[in-house]
Length: 112
Length: 113
Image 1 (cartoon, each protein chain N blue to C red):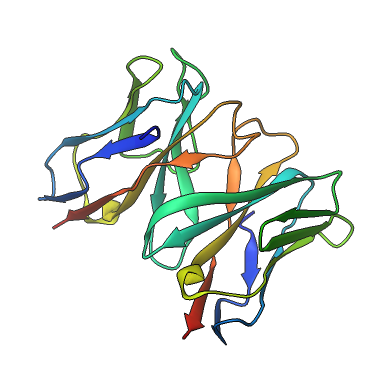
Image 2: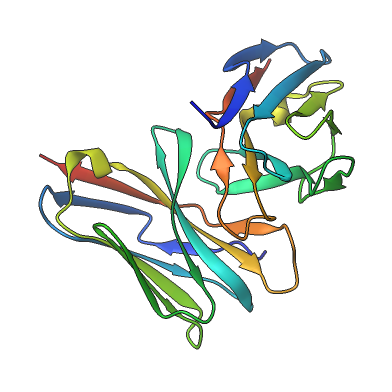
């Protein structure tokens, strides 16, 4: 299976703390994307990082990509209750135009 | 609001019944996709349409058919529903084959009894 793997599967932190989620993959990729899903519905695209990029920022989000280790991380700083959701790492294979590989996700809970 | 619209949001079918899930996008995207999401798993691609007039199988196409009716609409049909098709179905679209991210509909929760 080429399914990506997120780590941890679940994460519970206090509001205001930082949350870090990791993703590993097995093959060469074109780009890697992170999505958020609230309550089993509504997937939202958060950020895309290309294979020739090492780090990208968007608001409170910071994504890193290490192609030598085939891994990526998503950091959410100063977490809020509204960040409670599942986060998915998604990547596009180098030799595929349309096939995205999805991990099983990290379930993040922000405690007030 | 611009985006991807899926109908219906919920559906219960009896084994052997057929139904069509509808999807429409108003962002002038070229590519459209149908995914299913099962508990504890990531999304799996059922079918996709790279552009109007073309459709291709994804990872789990068995038991499904699709129609790219025009640039806006992409429907998914279950000809003879089975309990294994109980899942949440998502339609998505992208401008350039996912190169710039996907926009998802809100999903259809389908139960086959």
